[in-house]
Amino acid sequence: MSRSAHPAGPRHADVLPEGHYTAPPTDLNVLDEKVWARTVTRNEDGAVSVGGIEVTRLAEEFGTPAYFLDEDDFRARCRAWSDAFGKDADVFYAGKAFLSRAVVRWLKEEGLNLDVCSGGELTTALDAGMPAERIAFHGNNKSEEEIERAVRVGVGRIVLDSFQEIVRVAHIAQRQGKRQRVQIRVTVGVEAHTHEFIATAHEDQKFGIALAGGQAAEAVRRALRLDGLELIGIHSHIGSQIFDMAGFEVSARRVVQLLAEVRDEHGIELPEIDLGGGLGIAYTSDDDPREPHDIAKALSEIVTRECEAANLRTPRISVEPGRAIVGPTAFTLYEVGTIKPLEGLRTYVSVDGGMSDNIRTALYDAEYSVALVSRTSDAEPMLTRVVGKHCESGDIVVKDAFLPADLAPGDLIAVPATGAYCRSMASNYNHALRPPVVAVKDGEARVIVRRETEEDLLRLDVG
Ligand SMILES: *Cc1c(COP(=O)(O)O)cnc(C)c1O
Image (cartoon, rainbow, N blue to C red; front, side, top):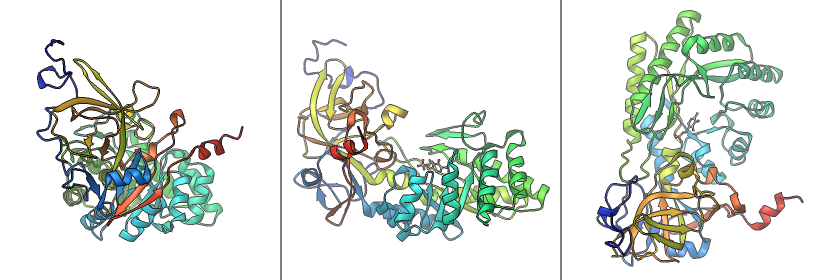
């Protein structure tokens, strides 16, 4: 690679350094509908709009960085999941992906249930009117106070995650004169991420009670003995951003084996199994997620087949998609600040946010795509790294992405598929003000989580 041969910087395929990209896309102005929320379109004048509003207008009104969430898309995905699973299954939205009172109301209206895993998420759910019986409470270290409140308000289920918790929840329920519906979370020895799953040795983690060595069977034994608990089923969650159903297949088989053991030992057929969440979405054009309908069909076939083989009644299935519902519905809008071409490498494009509004790239080496959205450009593709404004060299939003070579400070760029685990994991690092979430629908934009202010920062700092 010769520097002098490419005085214009790293723009040509033959000088591209190693990275997570294939080739520059043929037309940078085209938005791949796979990674953008449903109502996102590029208008004739070149600007991109969502819910009928141009991003340039949104930036003027709400500032940047900001998350814009397509409410119609969110509701459509809720309906797709609940229609796909039908009346004989339950869909729990995993609130940790992104939760706000507006989201809770949409879930309630669309007939979904809700997973929470902290007192704060429970408060948000109840405050926005989610009926307690439609809430499942998760977590590997729920506090006494959290359990007491969950039992008192009458959550539909608590997912027990350890031997201590079996006893703790039973005592709290008994003290309140209640019988709490519970599931036991088991570790099936499968871990799945993206296109792979590994079926050995993944008991080595903090969640759940291992099937291996008879631990889960012992947990069931203990739970059945305690008056404060009504054991309704077994829960398993195997990973995140999964495309391949093979991991679910192994997980379902192992959970059904446990149900058969429970029947043989106790003469009881537990009525429910929960297969967790973790279904993948398209972050880049290389990802091909399955439709909820296909997922529902595959899961129900697996469970039915395994139950027939074990001569068990097919239990009621529940699933817990978080990312697959909210992830694709939002994008983060940034304004381009400084631009630094590093010859022979790539061009660093700094935006007005960063790891404080999207930690996933730094945390998991996550892949994202990005597009210039305030205008079109016919300039040639330039290999960029989109970085934030924080004091960390790992403060990367998009590791490898092509943007037009005429990109300039003041342009608006957007990173799609940031609805899940971005605002919910946002931080105040460098005293950044966490961005707002703005819901857009039918030509109207409404702030559902407002931007933090410097007063908010100072209010917590009591001197
Ligand atoms: C995180 C989590 C989910 C949701 O995972 P997604 O990847 O967002 O679908 C579901 N269930 C449990 C128990 C989880 O911990």
